[in-house]
Length: 338
Image (cartoon, rainbow, N blue to C red; front, side, top):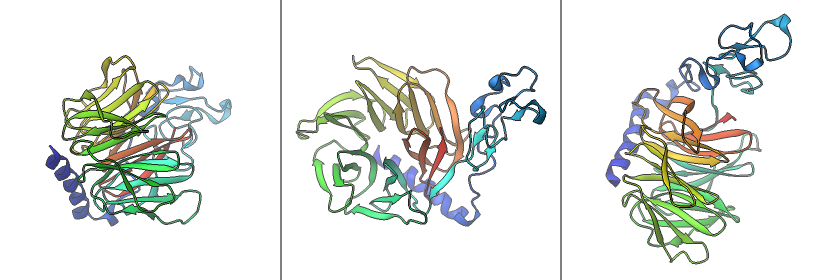
């Protein structure tokens, strides 16, 4: 199981190297070109029946006509959904690039305005202060193999060292990392925390596990995932995870009932959950629509595409205003307005 994931990661990076980074556009005019975009094809977002499809009266000024929800930077996909100057294409905002030059970037996490990420290929944990114009990435920790998922709690950043079969942590300020879980199972990948427990996936063993934060030696297996599980997130009493080869986004409620949020997701990779919404990335660049960022209700139903034709979409994180995500094959971290 593990070699398949590694080969896919290296193959994706290799394709980028052949194409050459200098030839990449900002994010491709094709991103979000599917009709309807985030707002669908309905023209009624602005409350006017006189607007043509995919238009709406958003600013209560009939004199300037209906706003084009497919291309208006201030009303992208729906009224008052601003792209903040990034551009609106096909009803979706073009992602804003925050970090470049990080081929192999995987899990990401935020602490205030500081963005942290794992570089799977370089075996490094890094950070950048987004509030400091012109800031450069800083090394937080190294000396491990295959940095994958990350999670932050109580001034520490926890991360999975995939090839070392370890879960480690380091202060947010940086320094030597320490092993927290010495036997998480083969190929630990995704990681999450709540007030009492640490959760992770074992890609090779195809399971979700947890241990008390007060005593991480007490490892408990929670769920068999059926194929390699790549990420996990605790949300109150519920757990969510993705399966890479199975292509599923899965929800286990507090009572242990397991349901699928979404199936048929090519190489479902990382996820984030907030309230009643789950967001995730799919990594397969050869699938229809390419590598994507998507979301749906935690109860399932319609899947909304937020960005498509990305290059190896991987880690994802949320703030009240933005969706942050990484693209490992071109080494970028980007964000979209919520």
